[in-house]
Image 1 (spheres, rainbow, N blue to C red):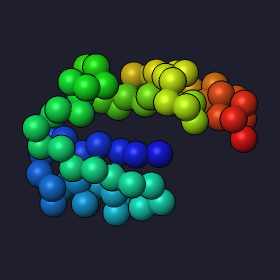
Image 2: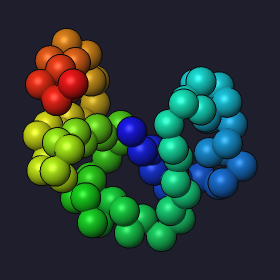
Image 3: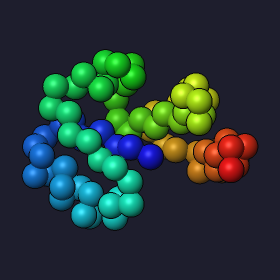
Image 4: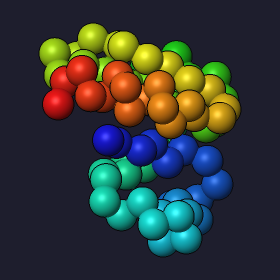
Length: 77
């Protein structure tokens, strides 16, 4: 899992990671929003799930359906 920090400041991105306990996955800082353009992200939160070969297999904006995400992930476990 990779998270993209793009809004506010880098310091606030570090605070977000510390507050949410998301240290277990990589966070990338992108003040240019190029990652949003490349992945066609229009708002947050957005989750995009890819298969091991890089194919997009799921995309959610807003509330993340945990059961659906886990079911898709189990297909590749």
